[in-house]
Image (cartoon, rainbow, N blue to C red; front, side, top):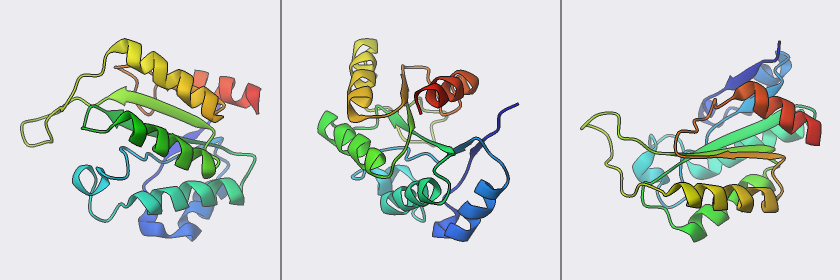
Length: 160
C-alpha cells in the first residue's frame, strides 16, 4: 500500500507540512490549481501562488525521498507562456509529478470555462512538462489531481 496525501497549504505553516511528511506518506501533493495571474480570481484569497510554491519546496527539502506532486486546471484563461512559467516554478520547487486537466464548471455559482483545451494541446503540454524535468506528467481533459495515483507513483518512483 502506498499513501498519497493531498494537502491544503496550511496557511504557510511549514511545521504542519513536516507533520504530514513524518506520517510515512509516499507522495506529498498540494495543487497549484492555476497560473500566478489567475490565482487571486480562482483560489481562496488565503491561498497565494508563492505560498503554494513555498509549501511544495519545503516538502521536498525536508523529505527529499518523498515524491512531490501538483496539479493545474486549464481553461480558466491562462496563456501558454503562463503555463510554461508555472511549470518552471514547480520544477524550481523540485516538484516531481505534474498533472493537467480541463476545468469544468461544477455549478452556475462557479467560474465559467473560458476555453475547452483541445486534446492535442494536452499532449503538447505533457511534452513540455517532461522537457522541463518532471519525473512524470499526466495531461488530458479528464485528468484530475488523483488521476491514476498508483500509476503516477510507480512511474515517478521508477524514474527517481
